[in-house]
Image 1 (cartoon, rainbow, N blue to C red):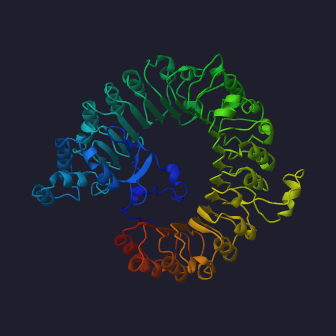
Image 2: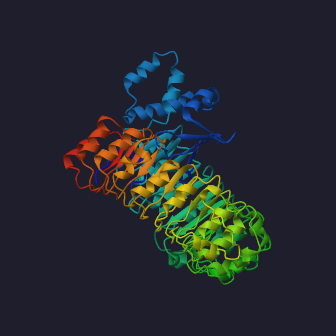
Image 3: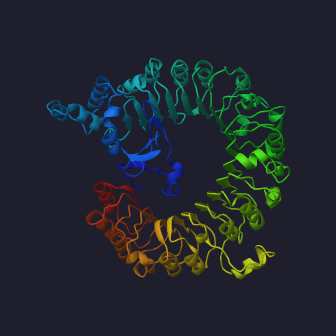
Length: 636
């Protein structure tokens, strides 16, 4: 596989579904000094989204400079700006040069030019391994020792490092940092150094947020003991903890921790021995509690009267089981709980009904995830026949055994409030029509890997809700706000019904691995405007483009996945000519595409992302030329 590095920071190269979950994936990582502005380190295409927390309004960085320049500029002293500017010159940043500096010095608008140079989103080092904004740094994929990085470890106010090898000199610089508030580390065993946790533990006067993923010793506990201002602590450990060094929650100091996340590789490597995590549930300041592969049982919840958390997440806590659910629901007060996840926790139908009877759960919960509990069926949610969630917006029951009956019960209970619904691999056939009937506010539906055919709609009236005897079979267009649909890996063959019942505009439609064919897919597209479309392995040929809407009418389409379909150069080039707004195209495992399409892209139609792996007719010479000549993100 050949790749270029021009935009490598935009995508996870191991994830082929790069445009499936853009909104969910974008997370805030770096906050500007006064927390008025959030600056995400993950980049979306060629734009940085900056969110103003004061008015909750998205603006781009150009507007930020234009509208708020005077206000924000006052927060940065000129000596610090020049300090960073000098550092960038020393480290051979590509966009800066001595000539540029001399030109700026002769310019009457020197301060303004410096401001624009330093705070534009395009400014990183020539290898794209360092991003910065004032004293907020993001370093990635730096394996060799670099003396200049000691400057960052000593002076950063917020530091995120991903796959950067830690050296003792970095840690010594970190110990002398007087302003570090936020530290994030993601790396392998080769990257980690024990001295890192020790250095962080000496920053007790400033350190507020720490993420360590992963560590390979027990020195992390020193951070908890010594950093009194710590608000957020997220820890993933990559080794077994000896019994005599188990994580003793009782020894935690009385600090300001609000977010705790503990993740072990396996249940056997839990941070604590059995029943030692109970103290976590009694900490009044903790708002978000996330525990993965931890030894949690029903005993941990006994005698607990109050639970103040807003988010309570258990993942892979196999000893919890339904008995744990019962004890959890016996807690007298859970006034603030908004998000509840019990993923892969060995839940069964037994005693699960306690969860759906507790009034505080039904009234306050906005987010519920019970996925990867394969023994859950419609029997476990029977209480929802008589109780409705009042504020639930997100529900994930994927990889359970709900079936059509369970989906019908759920749909009625959540219909008034549900916005995002995930029901992947739930043995659904006709229950999908209940979703379209009752969940009228739905915005996103993921229902992949089920048994949908949509073949014989007359059977729906007999099997789905026989006592109703209604003649109208509701489709997605009954959900006026539905813009994202994932129907992948089903057996859909009735495309006439889909074409008549899809909303007129969809942000994203995924029909991967359904036996649709070109003619049927053209029927679907004919009545719907799509922004992103994924049709991997759908038995498509040239007719899909040459004789369809995509080949004759511009649709403002942004991205398309055509992997595992044999479509020729003629059709692909027509697609790129007509769909002028398309930025990303994926055609992996295409047996017909040749060098001609690559030449066309270089000559006439540049796009941001182009993947064409495992295409046998592409020559090695053309692949190399394309990668070296193209400024797109390429995998070939």
